[in-house]
Image (cartoon, rainbow over all chains, first blue to last red; front, side, top):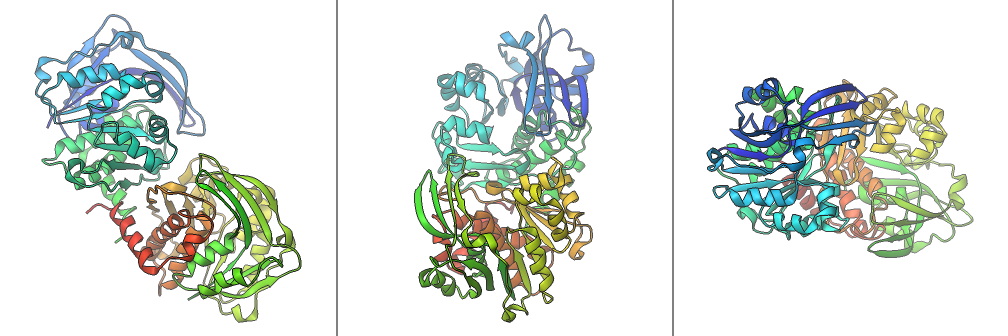
Length: 307
Length: 307
């Protein structure tokens, strides 16, 4: 099944304890589509500037990602610079130049109208809602957001949450959105806002999926997938978007969506996140094979399952 | 197999967002021995004051915990007061009155000489080492410590670590002990200090066991057991000691010690920690049945394992 991601494409300057990399291809839509491309056919809607050339487009093409929704605008592509100190869970933003992303208005090519799965990466909630409303064919919508929108545009975000099936955010965002510090209680509050399932990403500790009572006909018990302890974390940028790409990509690749598929999706999300951070930018995500992915899935399983 | 815990018995005053409780039985040795008592025969070495009466001793006796090593000293029992705000992972200490614990010199009754398993709860490292050296019969020694000793008595702690098989500490303590922020790398550094296995407790996210190459003949791959998302956390005090009691108690109850036993022990540790926090103090640990424990173990497994 096809999956469409709407979000940012960017150039990043990243510094971490492992070194630094300049002018590397990044952005939520990039990480998401590369990660998802190992599972299913991916389409992308994003805006890029004149500095985004054939070399960058080729990265998407090599992964058979449909770039007809990639709008080429006058000006520069979104640029972000960040530094990770010892605590790799948090980046200090050195600069954010929105550039052409500032006035981004997602336009869905008519060829994308039959898309089955939709992922709304972290953009302004009203734009997310507009995209969702314009896609009549979509069977399942996943959505990301961030503190900036939770604090700044709560009403708009509330409207968007009514339109999505799955929300994928982290612990801090969940607690902030629910205004509740107990995570399982916060999860129930978020589910009452609209989504049938909430995936909470715990960074190096894995992720938990909480279900609304009766959602997908699979009851309300949560499921938790631990992440793998990784020795080499070079660049945490894009880990969450790669997680989302693995999760949604795997779901889109399956005939049915049931509890077991969603559980496996949580593991595949963790697998793709774990690969993403091994090298700077999207380098590792560009060079994977499905065999490597499945081998890590098995390792993941062995290191977390009782006999 | 019998297990001996050496550590503190205390009276606590605890306040959390769920309420408060005064003058309740606490201390690492108390939580540990109650948790372990559901799995195996437990012996305790600790010191209490004149305020520790038959009512408190009866709590141990009801769980068939051997209290011949409980020294009754003149003065008051160790007292601790703490408050948990919204972040339940961290207590603000309101006061610490060491009282009789200040001059605690563990004395091992001769009836304990045949003990098979030993747990050195969080006390001064030199005392831990002395206890270990005096127990010739012990097959496996587990050990806890804290920031205070890691910073304050690093040489003494280094000596103790050479004498123990298992170290059970949390993420922050591991990083501080290794002087390394990457957790898997920190784990390897800690293992090089002596223990054959390191159990890192991640609080609400579960725990990971790291093995020294070739330790117990089971290779060096880590194993991670996620914790269960719990809605009702009333009082986090003693969660780590209850985890240790479940972990060590389960290991002591098994004929062999292999990878599978240690994996299951990690789950039982999480189960006992999850029960401990449901009520103030040791209330929940006092009232459990083995059936409730095994039911939660199964739930834990279902909520974290793929089919």
